[in-house]
Length: 79
Image (cartoon, rainbow, N blue to C red):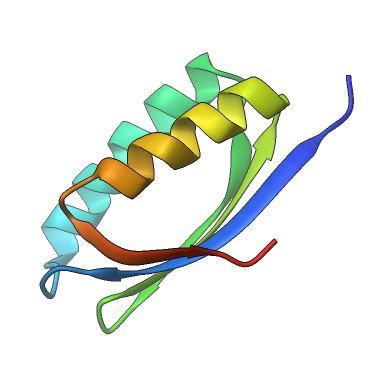
């Protein structure tokens, strides 16, 4: 299996509180572990940067979900 990667940036539709970010991180960890996805999530002043890595179909499906997520706007794949 070849590792597929996507790095994207996006802008949150509003400033997120720490409790919201922790809940989002917990939800992402559960989902990603179940789908064999690893990576990195960073957030600063309404900006997200995330690295997703795993099987191509799983990573692309998750990225498509993120693009439709109402918490994100201006989603741009960098890699």
